[in-house]
Length: 194
Image 1 (cartoon, helix red, strand yellow):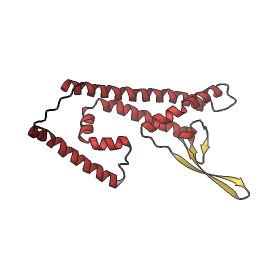
Image 2: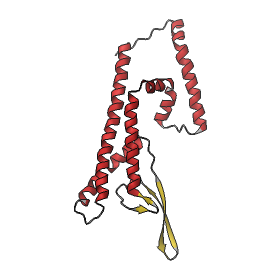
Image 3: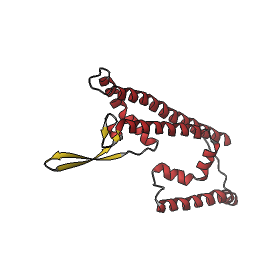
Image 4: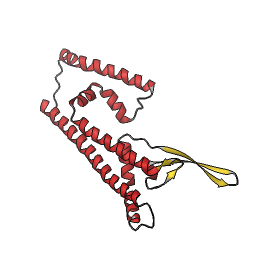
């Protein structure tokens, strides 16, 4: 039975390393394309059109990877004069405008995107190394309810949810300590058949 748990654990470690390595490689390739794209930022440049298409082709996947790594979209409020003393207010999402090469108000879009990609590469790299750290896996097991809550998207920053998760953690710890004694008292033997 212990062998099955060891195999499942090894499979989880390999999956986590492979997934984050794939994220890192995808981000690195996209960073190279994006740097080249921003270097040829004129429509008159003959390379620009093909680079623009490559950036747009990978845009959805890169946004998905950035969100998967926990990076939130950054919104810029823009006010533009429309004439006759009227203005138009817009909210522009940075990630939705990856292909935009210019300033919006005081924000340089390409520099912001490059910072996002560098940060995401760092997160992916850290997750690869964390997969090899035994303390990460011990922490995951000890705080399993918190990990599950984080996975399903419960906002842990909210104090109410945070307290509820802590209560579930305490119940989980008590159950894990008492469960073997209860099973022994009731004469229940657990076997896992795979």
